[in-house]
Image (cartoon, rainbow, N blue to C red; front, side, top):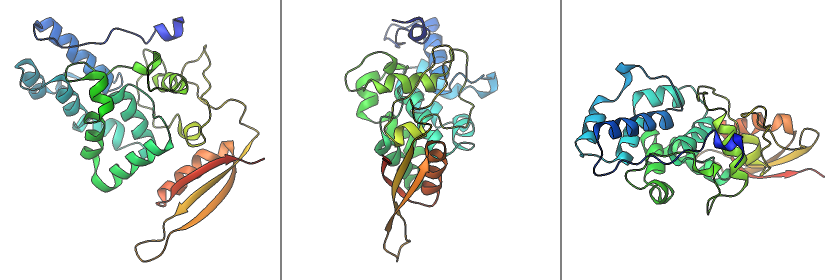
Length: 255
């Protein structure tokens, strides 16, 4: 294991049945750190009611994580000030311990956000088989895809390191880190001397064709349209398409 990877790897934190008060505090601190992305937390922002329920055994760690993610604090930090794309990146990181896997996953969550709302979007992660199989009821989510895991593609390693940034960083940046590389199915480049630098390998001089389904409204049939853009323009064009209600169909390199 490289020193870069080791900086983010730690043993999963689990609340066991015989936990002491000190054990409980370790779990709560780990949950706040993971779900809130290392954000500084003042005493007045802590969820005292949820903490009491967890201490009394009335809720599990999974439900505690859900309450943190549905809190006004989480919403103000990551939902109100970010694009849907960045919000989904962070939800995957905070709640599933991995980066988004592909464009279809992001599109699925954009649709949940738009049609069902904020709380349904949070529930879609915490009630997923992905969450339950990896964390169960009493393990705090952690950055699991920086280890080799069944079902996680190798490209997920670099993407997760891009989202992690550094051990002392927070997730206050509102810039999407993976929008271009996921949409175009390109690898994520990581510079070992500067974790958090993102980009696709050898793409800056290339051009790409984005095929999209353009929404025509309730009474107008949707139509397909394509855009030819440089790599530098791709992120903004994808955002423009999604902002207008369009759907990305494919992104291909122009020969």
